[in-house]
Length: 65
Image 1 (spheres, rainbow, N blue to C red):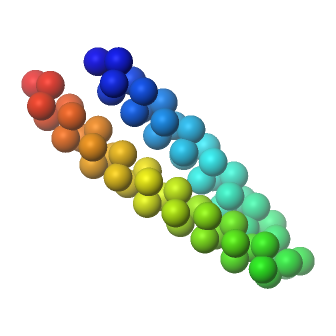
Image 2 (cartoon, helix red, strand yellow):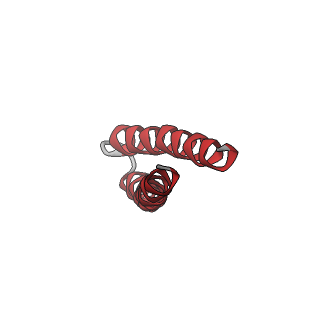
């Protein structure tokens, strides 16, 4: 169960970072397009990690039952 808890904590941390990057991208959109694009790119990479964790956590929950 500790492994599942660590995965859930990591997912929460990644979601927080994703939201921050998306907000930064939105704020930079009017002033610095390069920073906006870079923040969006990093957010996309983090979203991919979140989706992987979502798949792993869902698979782990099925095995626990």
